Amino acid sequence: MRNSFHFSLTFATTHLRTLAFSFLALSFAGSALHAQSLGYEGPTGVFVTPLAATAASPAKGAGHPVIAYHVLAGGPVIGTWNTVSITEGFAQRFEIGYTREDHATTSTTGLSPLWKTGINIFHGKANLVPENAGKTKWVPAISVGGIARTNDSNVFNGANGQSTTNGDIYLVATKVVTQIDKHVPILLNAGVRGTNASLWGLGGNAPEFSARAFGAVAFVFTGPGKSTIILASEAAQQPQRIKATSAAGVTSGVLDIPTSVDYAVRFVPSPKHKLNVDFGILQAAGTIGTGVNLKARARAAFGISYGF
Image (cartoon, rainbow, N blue to C red; front, top):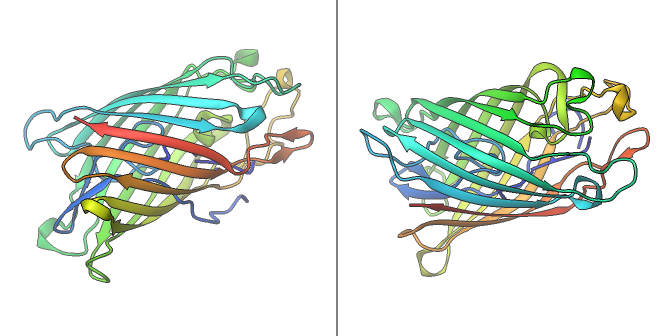
């Protein structure tokens, strides 16, 4: 699979290859990062990969919820995906949330509908090390988190007793660098996830659980009227194979999934309001196996997040 993608949506060889432009929601107090934007699946993050930051909350108790909507125009085979998310932070260290991902079916002969239902996504994250811990200027924020997907029933899942659930466990580090140019902060993000989901579940289940790397870089510019414009790139390795079944007419292990790539920009209209608007172009999957072309190259994605 040659594939995919904040904004808020996401996927070009089996090695960690290119980076993808994606949306981040950031506001700065000194060199600290205060994320207010949800990724495609719900965690505070880039388009689909998580940041170490958690949803805003007080030192004690719960914060106000953050909500988000994303849409991915995946083309004539993948179709259009819509997600609605709600995430809440706790004690400046934790967040939990839920996302509903729904699919508008297409009419491509043989491959449609790939997905028979929507997907339920549950997620949680805990910050282990705050950014600049110990009064340093170089320590990144480090967090651990997990994502569970249920009802992931597509042409490859749910047949012949195959599971319709999958998930990720990840470790991520995030650092905002202001030493190079204090007027243009740079956000660096890198992590590793253990996953048994191909393309975050959009491609079905992988044959086994595997470790996959992900990363992002973003440049933060000041726009008109104290607005913020963020240009970012994001990449995420995918499990190389999809666990196909004979019911789908594809031999298990044949389909080839590359690293996911997207290009994006995020606009934060005002520091007074926790509103972010994202737009991106997804370089998703083309031909992933003999006779299997997902026709999802250069597909548009859009997202919006709002923190109460």
